[in-house]
Length: 488
Image (cartoon, rainbow, N blue to C red; front, side, top):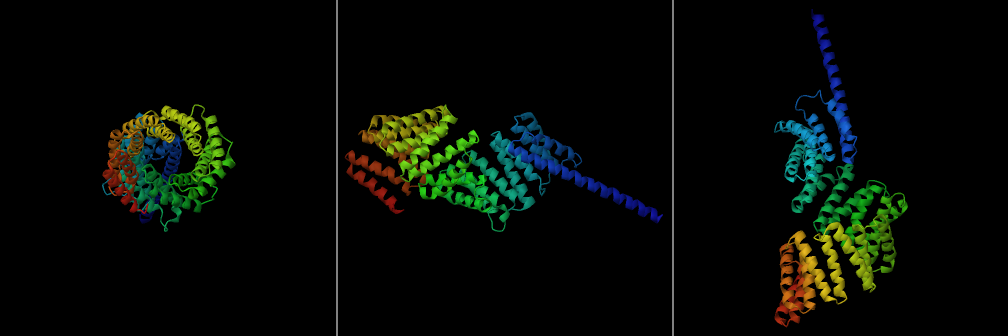
């Protein structure tokens, strides 16, 4: 009897062991198809749906409400949403959320955060920002429980939620998320995260640039390039977007010497691969344009002109009807013509740039307003003050409609228009514009910021012309005091 019991126990053990082996194989197949499906989904490959369908087949043996099945369904919802299949996306999302919602509050399930993150991406793509934000928050909490506060998954969710906030212009809320993402990924104790850390620094730098905080963008973009070059071949095409961002930042900061290395490297790489595809030609034009702008900024118009002309020819061939890149190069050429006292040619280039921007962006876009301002500045330079005032009035109306009457960008346009009125001796029209510009800048930067000095200088000059010497002296004194704070 005892021997029969031993045999039965042995047989039972074999069944359990065999079942466990089957289960492990089933989970391995599920994981392989789920992971490959998600990789393909992020690339936009239509094969993603087939891989995820196979993954779901392998998940049928999992217990009801299993988070693994919910993860696959979350990915399916994302793929269906990208394909424009809203009903399928909603069905998959409902089924996934039903399982994820049923998990215990203290669950540390390793798949929950990834599923919630994918669903958040689905709703973000639909511009359902409130629901997406709620899901990103849940994904972050789930990842922290499953992998700790400094896990890679935590950093990725932080980055995704920051992107959601940036999409809405909520940079102050996004900033601590980006900084924490960078802190998690860029750590000496985890050198294997170098590529992820580089991407996080790049995203942080882009956020600061979009926010108008170029000085805060610099250390992030410089670190991103450093990490990218450390982790591989310097001629790796994957490093080019990092170099472009850093080089263009230095152009914006008016530091051509620092911009030279990254932008020259990009141009050399683009010239090696140019001509194979239309896209490569467009990329070559971008690199030529950037180097042309660098020479222009450095006071070398003779070196800049052939690069900008070549960039324009490539752009016009690629986009005969005109595109925004063409408009940007036209603007750079106009700046070059101004430096060489070719006012008529400069006006022609600026008019073409304005027409393209108005067509592509619309009359009320900030880019169109900037083109009008450029025309106004050129007119003021040639002493055509009536035309200058007309352009500035149009630009001001466009900025106010697109960004609101108290946006920082409006202050610059107010300043230009006030200067035009001052030079036309229309002091009563100029004064309230100067005051508005000062008030906007005070609110944005604070009353003691040197940003106010240039407007106060112009205001002081107007007051002096209007015969109000005491008021002019007070405005000039304040401007000098502000400049003294930075040694300017």
